[in-house]
Length: 329
Image (cartoon, rainbow, N blue to C red; front, side):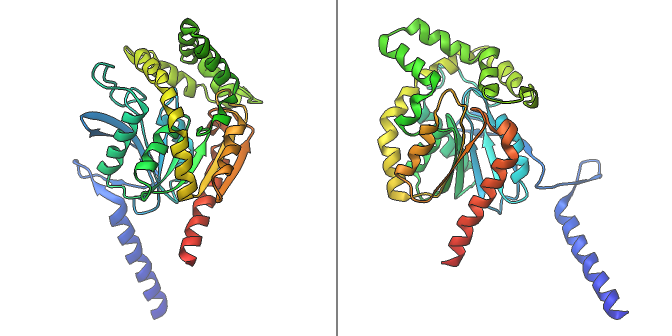
């Protein structure tokens, strides 16, 4: 009986300790349960710009910094973040001009991949994150690789979801068409396709192309993107950013050298129906990386809409393997 009483006492003390950690008093005195499994939606001022970000998981665990693509926002990561919350600390910011972050005019802020990558460095520092894995999609690639080249000691590895770093990847249907227009100087055609990509029709094509059952893709995704793009001044910002994309090509050699010299563990999760970046872009990483896993998914440019469960499992296994190998040393 004494042992039973002792056991119950220990359980009660443990529960009390957990309760103290998971509850806080509100202004009216009502206790609210706080859990790391819920996604928080926050804003923080970085270099004079209000940056919106989503955060979930325990900050004491490994951090995954999720960098979104065009023409979406951190909204694209909402499902996979929930599935990773129990094992990792996950942070996903919106760039300026995207999502719910500030959108200064092109006269007030120079929208280049270089500048946004510097802002993301400052964002990470402001949150006191010393090291992290980078998950990157589309625009997240050129932003994330710039961050890694500047701070190789902070980056523990990459999770690449249709983010290009090789000319081989530019063989997608839309990339080829766009490149041809630029080469012949068809600037009217360039502007037309840029605006089409930001139209509801273009957005739906990005989300639904190659999807066997489009009804499974929640319309809230492309409708949210479209609504945010329709805000005053956003079109001009996005066009400016699109026109700066060519600046990334000159950086490809430096990024590839970084990969060869640093050999960051890399997980590639690539939607094979992406009209921007072809599967060749996914395979090209293996030219420079020894520790790379490549998974080709029957999905679109935004494959996480239907494959967040699979992606979360691959990410968890990937990071766990890295941690296991570190602990064995």
